[in-house]
Length: 418
Image (cartoon, rainbow, N blue to C red; front, top):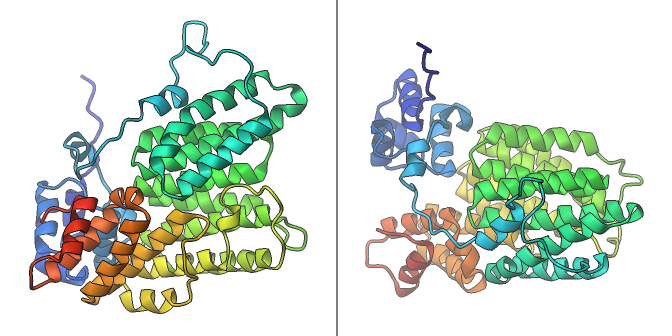
């Protein structure tokens, strides 16, 4: 009889083991984790809850003085029970082009008829979708991407040899944007398929900058999946491979390198390695300064225009929030340029860090004001942010009176249930 392979410990089992090794009670651990509810610790260890957010795990890891990744365990039961709750969107149209049905001969079913549009026309359509995405108009992007993906794939299939690199680069960029959108919509497995296809197309294009920006999307997805060690290693290894010579590097090369460093810093910060994170942000700052000295090339890649000194400062703020230092978050945020910025989701994420810092300091009115600002600016984005729900929880728990109308509206938007 073949022995069963050992099963991975759950988050709760790992947490209990490290807590006992540190000789802490559940109450003391909760206190050291920044006032985390002892009920949260108890439910995790008892298996009542099978999952926890990365900020919660990071707070526990800081209290135990261990890497966050050591607490991440088997959460298959949590996935089966849809924990935490989520609101799935209809992604059937994107699924058909990202993961198409193939016949016995390997041919795709329902391929577009006729000649595809030119690469210039398709590039213009991609820029339009990108603008919708950056404006947080996910409904428009979700509607436009499936036919665009199908047309770009058709253009790759019929491109002459001399046009193959440009066609594959366009396919990589289109699939990359699709992957980013799917990450925002918390469709992680489908996003991974999109980004894997983007990376394959980028390799065939021979464009290192395109490939590097796709890798940054992969790192973001890995962090969303709790795969912090892999995200950090992928970001830093790729950054080492493409490190530009500052004397002759293009803004695109500098930005691609800088985005990877910022992504690696985010992963290391969440894995309780703030020193490494700070070093990477310092290196990214050098790239941002160099870009600021040069005019950007026309028709730059998506994300290139969004990498600058302001984005690097947002990374410093984010790392302070991950470290649980609200005072430093507010100090550093004072020199972040007013937004929104070209990469809207980055600035919005930064504003959540500011709201978190206000909430931690019991400045509930200021925290609510920031969230109300985001509700007006980016409601579709805000609905997808578990971080926003956690902040509303802190504000609601800290108030002595009933919720204000604004806070009650926010609670409904982010799905907070008292």
